[in-house]
Image (cartoon, rainbow, N blue to C red; front, side, top):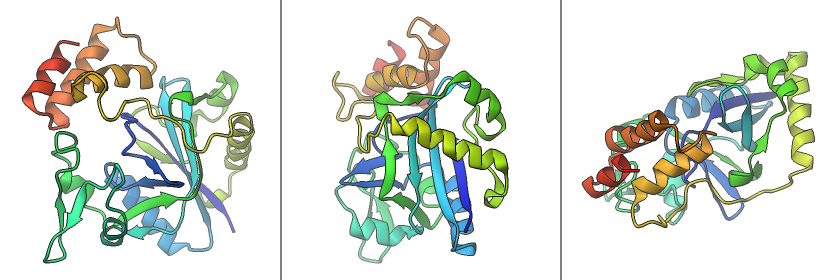
Length: 246
């Protein structure tokens, strides 16, 4: 039985993707391509163990946001039938048995339905470490050694196919060694929820900067956060205005 690690960068750690609640970590919205690739591999090679490594912080020196041993993929229709009160429970089943966007956090992620539902599976784990604001910085030596396996941008990477690489085995060992000194299972996410400032986008802009390891004085990063709120996240106009003024 082999162990397989997939890794990706978490751009917005707001408690929904991943969502950590009541001992379960789930990736139900966003990252539809990643969810589809992993679910396909899990169903094809059922004897292997699959891990998901979520990273945040600086591109050249990331931090471990979470590390999870994945359960078997959950059909998306079952997930939203079983879980209706989680922070990522953004969809409900209508009378025709179709998933529809509900009004939970209606101002957030309003434009993501087609992407969220483009893959039929949700990734879950009940054997995980989630560090949130206490994300573990990866030492420079380890980051350099395993650079090829750690995504720099928004892409995702499998650490090594079917665990046949000695580098993969080393990476898994290094991750577990780092985690032993920080044995959190459920921490607080970077971005406050509900918003603490009365505006979701303002919180998100500042939280985005903190989570990605930038300083607020870097105007280009502030504008990037505001642009994401405006163009990609479907915020209401009041939130867009506030984000643009951060």
